[in-house]
Image (cartoon, rainbow, N blue to C red; front, side, top):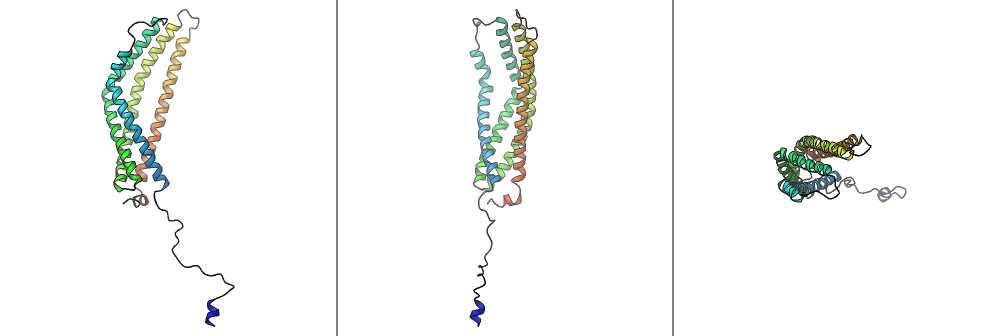
Length: 230
């Protein structure tokens, strides 16, 4: 009687009671991996930009003077050549005017890029030091993006003044002996449009990077993310 009550052919056998582990995941979440990889890439690019920027700030004026043609170019109008030389001189003046902030920005970029690169690499290994380092890196990089955007705004304003002067000189030289009296205005409008596009792109990229670093600061301090690190 006990055996028949224990076994019922019309009843499906019961499964053993074990803890359900269907939603348990191991390793890094996808958002954490993406954040680390992007920070590593930005850090590597930042280091390269810092090194190239330092070389350009140190040797750029000397190289530009070295390769600048001393005499006139055959077949090239003297007015246009003078306009190009004036533009080069104005661009050197802009660089000299902002040289100290540019150098400080290069140092700031180097520090932020190093923190992002090292923190991103260690975070991929789920090391607690890497998480803390990446938090500091995101904070430093966010401050850098804000300061660098402000600096580039002033540099762009001075550059636009130099470019507008160059466009006016080029337009005046091109319309000599030409029946196109508005060519100077067109040259100025064209150069200004290019500068505006560059400014918009610069602000757009800075905004995206600032949003990424803000996300990193918040995401890396969440409880379930902190629990992954040892």
